[in-house]
Length: 293
Image (tube, rainbow, N blue to C red):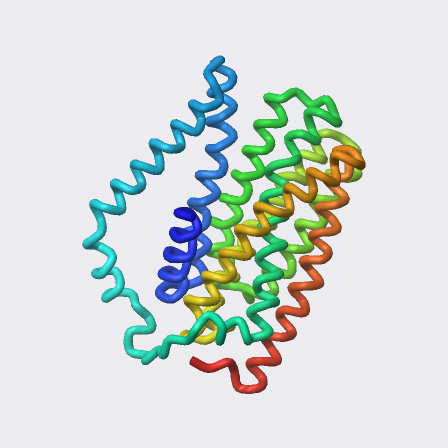
């Protein structure tokens, strides 16, 4: 509940005040945290400590975050005054029910659900695939899972600059195709290194999708629906990262761990189709004069 509130609040704040570049850099910091997670737990277990120590370390980090937010609480109003791009635009508030009546919102929910499901399932299950199904040493598999999250971070840092020179929507289309190519490399299993490269490619290709879609929410939905839209998208994202890895685990239990890669490929292809339908709907809305607000 706490993480969901932070996600929705911070993403709405940044999406309505800063550029797509800034939102990508914001989410690059998420990648740094995600990269550190496997490293922390691997080192805790390698040192012979109980696994609870890993959660304790992360908990201390959360307390540090709360302290930092408390100490900087007076900075946020100043940032609003300096950077609020919507300050001179009167924005009426609308209900969540009104936002849910927009067809493009439901398409956004589907895209966010599937995207975060792919991201979480890749980070969760490739370690088991490599170690249990392909007999890759645990230390090597753990390193490459960290590389996956590291690629996500690097991709967001790079794409924060690239979006200034390329259409966001073209970039995202190419990235989803990249996710499919990475899943294909893991599935083919021609060599361990190619599978590792495929894993890193998935991380790199996934990188700009979430932050760029968050950043373009005001453009798609209008200012009045932005806060509701971001909240709904974040909620769909959390459901996706919770449910899809579990569904994939059930599938692996019945069909074996080698089903992981083709399942990721299928999910990436469905995401590509959904994204194309989504974009066609957005363009149709703009052609009809926009959503308003």
